[in-house]
Image (cartoon, rainbow, N blue to C red; front, side, top):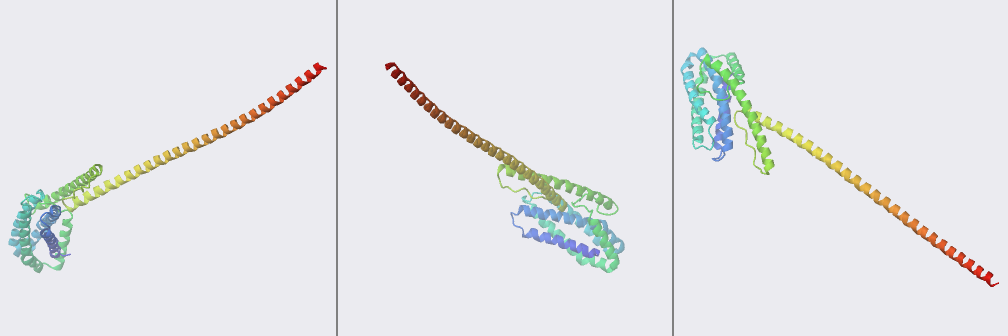
Length: 304
């Protein structure tokens, strides 16, 4: 992709974000914060690669763009100051919308001048190959460019190249740290919500795309771990319940068997007792009859 096309695509991306902000409702604070965070990131990266690569190349190869490049640097400077103020401003603040509106007006003016005056001069002066090479350098620079505004940093070579590279590394480390912190906070909020029985949603991640992505990854990883722990707990509870159930079943079975054994023994004892009683009665009756017979015989003998 050639340099002019790449920069115009950046302009289109930012303009789409501007329109989203303008359509957002007055009380859409979370949505506005998210949109402005994206605007800050996109404009910070775009301004950095123009200042580090495009403007110096244009001034060097296309002398007719000298004044346009200098004016563009000043416009960038103003935009970066507004971006830096918006970074820490609550979207509910009374001047939040006003600052974004002024930012949008300034950037649209800047874009119009670049696309109608600056870019045509560069395209006319450079070959397709030169524009392609310049586009490759811009695309590569976007990977490490600062994701936050740095209005106090130098914006012209050679200092801006060195400072910009350092700022890019620092910004990405900061974005990662912020993402991890926000992801952890979201998990904590969800845990408290579950404990308290409330339905309050965890706060949405803010900041650059890297910060938001890291926050989502951190939150998803922690949530997955929590689900694994919960599943293990459920399995353990299930095992305990199964063991307890088996124990209860075993106890019931043993008790039933014991009751049956006692019943059987009792029945046998009763039967034995009855049999013994019958035998004793029969024996007593026989003895009684024998005694009576003996008495009768003795009496008869005595009479004779």
